[in-house]
Length: 208
Length: 194
Figure (cartoon, rainbow over the protein chains, first blue to last red):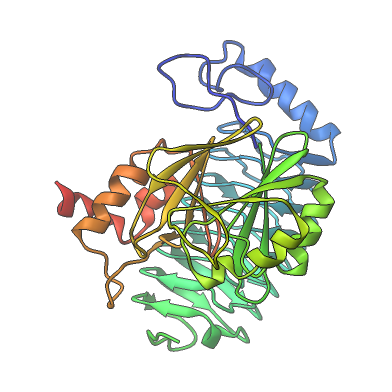
């Protein structure tokens, strides 16, 4: 995970994908984005790359192995991560609309500040994931392992957590509006100071 | 620099192995009880373990040191003088630990323990127990951090660039930007400090 600094002296960003500059300071952005897309398409393993702010709309990452890579502030509308393995992968502040993470396997991945809507996490393992401040709406978590994940300060709207493993999942100062927790072990989750409305199970703040 | 993360199955603490890009040598942060999966991780990388850095002297972080010392010839660094009578290289604020191409800058962050340090290695900050994603620990019994603790965090962590990755002992990784914007403890920081 060694990322060099952008060569523009006043810039604090990291250089992107084998280059000397960040995306903002790259002259020919279009050809760089095309080069990155071709590279990602051709590889089954993606390890230790910085793709900050690169658009990946409609991209198919299915069955790839992604680790220690940065997809921060990206646009990933309709991106597919079916059966993708993700270790310490950063999607913070990324737009993930109509994306599909079904049957994926993730550990230590970061979705903090991301915008997830109409996204599917069916049968995914999302162990110890960071959803701090994420906006999650119309999203399906079904048979999903969310153990040790953090949803602190997240806004969750019209989303189902059906039959999910919520062991030590941490919800604090979260807004839970119209969510379903059917057959999930929400008793093993930590719920503190949450604002819940139209939830199918009456949640009480408690400290285990 | 490469960062490998695994979990101690006994304590659910994160264990970090940092190696050079060629995975020739490595440094471990808070080895915990040195469970079998940590040993296997080191073997898989092929790196020779050279150093151990302890973020604070707690049995959860240090209990495996005697076992590690039997297997590897390692130097131990901590912000205290004594861990199980092993020779310790004491480190303090601003010091740099070097191992080949790897550099680790020490930041004293006595938030929940008097000897707590954070370790900045390139773009990654290892914070030990002081901070978890969305949570700030404290000296205080009620776990509610005070002005002194906020000031340490402000000066050493929140002043870092947004993209710096935070690796805590417990829970998922984070970034400075995420913590600054969404950690409920830091929303009050401007009121407390300024």
